[in-house]
Amino acid sequence: MKSKKTNGSGICAAFDVIGGKWKAVILWELHVQPLRFGELKRALPDISEKMLIQQLREMETDGIVHREVFHEVPPRVEYSETKLGATLSASLAPLADWGDRHAKRVGAARTRTGSAK
Image: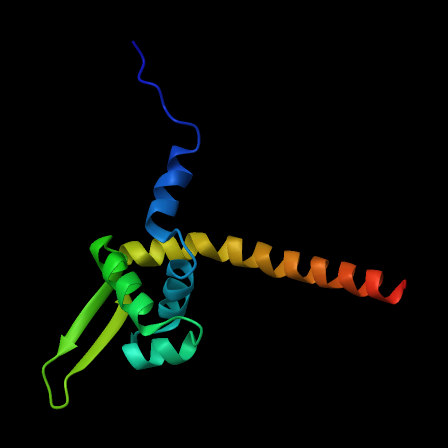
């Protein structure tokens, strides 16, 4: 007997890791370079500190973000993407390209609609 495979199980597994409003955006920021917490917070001003901490912890648990503590005074913590996170970032690039194209189409459509009035 064949085991039943849920349709879209791969996409479901991916969204289990990056689902929600912030995880993909955080990973996208970390893809460029490792960042300290404050740098991430400044890059994402609309996220609360509590939510950023929670999302980073979940991403670390999922193995896509690495948290490195530097034992110096004052203490420093830096976040970076792991090798697994880099593969996920690479798969987000086509989605980001699609989003850019979509935003331009929507903007152009709104401009045409607004100028037609």
